[in-house]
Length: 412
Image (tube, rainbow, N blue to C red; front, side, top):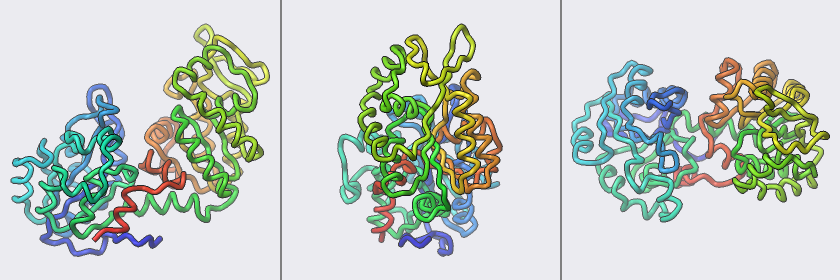
C-alpha cells in the first residue's frame, strides 16, 4: 500500500554511509541469553539489501529500558545472531556514539557493517526521558546522539515499526537532517495492521487477553465504534473486568489484586462499552482457579469465590472462543487467555492457539507475550502474519498517530 513514505528497496546505496535503525529488542532469560530471535530474523532482509548493495552500514538499536532494567544488556549477542542469520561478519563496538564508535564508522568499507552499543545507554533515548522532557523532533537535532552521528551519514533507514510509538532521537530526529527511507519490515507491519482496520474480510474477530488491559481498552473502543470488529472475545484480566462491569461479584482476593493495581478504574469504561456494544462481546462463562494444588473451574453464575485467583478461562469458554475463531474470516489476537506459563492455567491459551492454527481465516497476532505464547503451543508458521510490534501495534489499532510514521511522512 502506498502511504507516502520512501522505501529503501530499489535505492542505490553503493559507497554511501547508511545509518540503519531496526528494532532488535528481544526477550532474554535470567542469564542474559536471547530466547526469541524473531525480530532479529525479520531485520535480516533490510540488512542484507544494504550490505549486498555496497553500503557502509552502521546499525543503531536498543535493548531493555529503565522500566525493564534487567533487560538492559549490551548488544554483542544480537550481533552474533545477526551475523549467523545473514552469513556476514558484522562488527560490534560497545559504544553508541563516542570517539571509538566514530572511528569505526569512518573506517567502514563497502558491504561492511557495525552494530553500535545499546542506545539505551544514552539518557536521551530512555522512556523516562521521553515522558518527562518531551522534545520535538526539531529539538532532537541538538541531542548528543544526533550531533555526533548525523554528520557522518548520507542516508537514514528506519525498519523499526515495532518501536514506532517512541518519540526519541534515534527514531524521529535524523529524518530532519538527511534523506530517509523505511525498510521492508516497516511496510509489512503497516500493511498487515492496516488490513485489519481497513477492508478485512468479515466476520472479523478480536481475541484479547493478557494482564495489560490498558492496551485492550484502547483498541476495543476504536474498533467497535468504527465497526471494524464483529466480535471481541475477552479473556485474561480484560475478561474478568468486563464480568465485573456486567454486575458479577468476583471475590475478595481477586478484587484486591485488581484494586492494588488500579485496574478497577477500567470498570466504568467496560460498562460503557457493554451498554453500547454488548452484543459484540463474548465474555467468559466459566473461570479456572487453583485449589489444593489442582485446577478447579467455576461457572460465573456461581461467583463470588473469595479465596480464588482466576488465572484462566474455563473449558466451556475455551470451546466458545474456538467456535468463533473457526467460523471467522479474519482473526486478530493480542494477549494470552490465561497464565499459560503455569501448566494448571495453560488450557485456555492453548485452545485459542490450536483453533487459530485450524481456522481458514486470515490470522494476525502481535505483542511479545502473545508471540511467545503462540510459539509454545503451535507452529507459528500456521499464522498468516506475526507482528513484531507490541505497543506500536496497539496504538495503531487504537487510531493514534505514531511518531515514527509522522517523522517519515515529513522526511527530507
